[in-house]
Figure 1 (tube, rainbow, N blue to C red):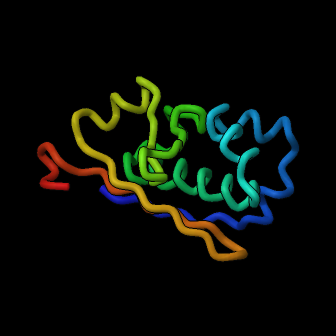
Figure 2 (cartoon, one colour):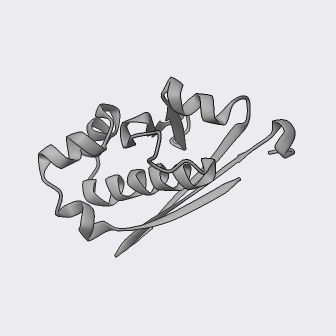
Length: 120
């Protein structure tokens, strides 16, 4: 299953602090504070959330944006993290993730596969 999403960076720039806390996981907000372009960074993270919702086919019917968050792996690569509720939708399948930014947008692709869906 695949999901893709594009987010206007300016849309994230306009969010209030309260809205950011409601949408983004605390780990994402901490990483954004350390980033030289926090709105671009968060736009990519929001695109990941939406791409994940599309890939699992549930959207925000059963999950919130707090159920999916992105951190950095050992080599700086984006790593998707899931709450137990989100993990239950994925099961034992693997998740591949890519994020890209090019003003004025950020884009993310989430690929979920493995198990009975084939190799990933």
